[in-house]
Image (tube, rainbow over all chains, first blue to last red):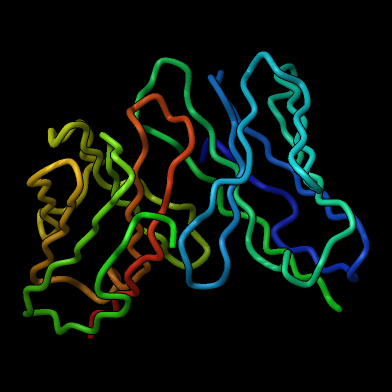
Length: 112
Length: 113
């Protein structure tokens, strides 16, 4: 089984609504990152949260981390049609280098 | 543009062909990566290079052969591939191996016929 798993697999909302995606992982981490991927393109780094942080903001993005539950959430507020993409969490295993492990992603569709 | 450029964007090859994927980064990063992205699967880390030295090879079949001639360029040489190798191949780079934020290229969509 994989290190990081996003939930839900797919999410469809109306423009202006908030979108929440969750990520669960299995082993201790140094940090957790969220990436976005537009269809058929490369991944774009959104935000990184370290294991000693509980919440982080960047524009309309809010990320939380609960290391006791081994879970993270990504909240996109006031969503726009341009936010339509797949969102991935990636975990950096403690003690490892050059080994960022990605989940399968959440496919977000924001309808205008 | 992200600063990581992959060519070609699309590639169709027969199972007996030999082709190469190219990745170039202009970010001054010291680590580069190849990932494979197949439908409904997580990204699979294939190879990791740091300062032109290979530091990770995740049990990748020998029909995939990486090459890193300098810290700005990374190649993936392909030969005698199988149809199940069809996927999006993504190159990424980072400042070092500390896993703080990767920059990805747009990928090469490979179809093996």
